[in-house]
Length: 86
Length: 86
Image 1 (cartoon, each protein chain N blue to C red):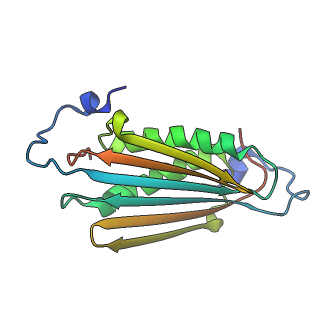
Image 2: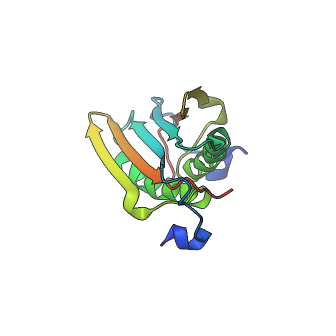
């Protein structure tokens, strides 16, 4: 889905600098649950709610997932156009 | 809203240990936008989507917001019952 087209084109020429939104999720589990699945599901949900509030260029979203011991972390790095919704 | 009652009571006696979910949002702005408002809005949205997937005890959610220079950060620390939805 092209978020930019949904919110409509904005005049970005006046501000070529990009904002960035970084989201880090860390799940520390005390049981043997499948936290990778939880994190993966939350990633989709969170990207969706972020996309409702800001213009996201899908090509500028970087994801990094790591699992160490009992902790699963997910990093989401989103480059935002300066124009934003709401 | 009591999420626990929404998802129904689960047998938590077998697992008293708590999982934790930590979410860190960082917004680095290149313009003079009101990122505090954005972060605040995202906080509500993200808590809502997390609550859809896991049992959240509202009393166990800790929030910490910080603003330093061009970066606004929000920390969300959620203690999760071992039982989880989906």
